[in-house]
Image 1 (tube, helix red, strand yellow):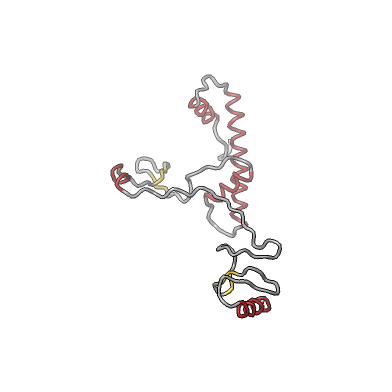
Image 2 (image 1 turned 60 degrees about the horizontal axis):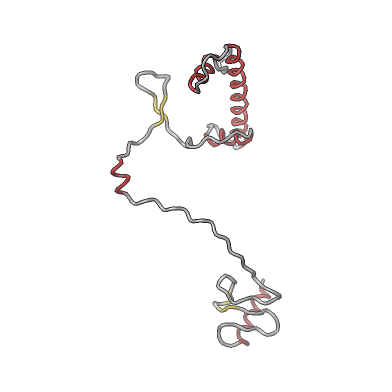
Amino acid sequence: MALSDLPAESALAAAQSLGLEGLDVSIAEELSRSASYRTRQVVQDALKFLEHSCRHTLSCEDLARALRLRNVEPVFGHQGLAFSRALEDPRLFFPESVELRFEDILAGAPSPLPLDPTFSVHWLAVEGVQPAVPMNPTVNGEFVMSLGDSVATSGQGTEDTCARVQTCICQN
């Protein structure tokens, strides 16, 4: 058994934790071989993402991309975690976490809720006429109704605005 192979005991332990008692040892060995193979594939894909991004440290995002490449559901909550070594066993690592008091959470301001998605329909111009609505672009703060020979605006003086519109069109 190589170092990267999962032992059959881990497959038996996983089956027992799921409530599958009496799993045959040969099935557990096959499951552990399959899990080792799939794990090796994902790690190799993650290393490819690492190499192509010209970095030297494997990140959680590399593994997430490798899982997405293999059409595996993403693992949430493992972005940028710091791990500490346990004092009792140097082989045991655990994520560092900050203890929060429930009273502090309740006393704090609630986080803002995300806005509901909204859709709106807007026409920039209909049959060559630009409606005077706030969503349309303006020329010097005035709404342009038409860009033809006669220019009607919501401001004053159509001749002055016509000259500004022609200048604006010529510059673009």
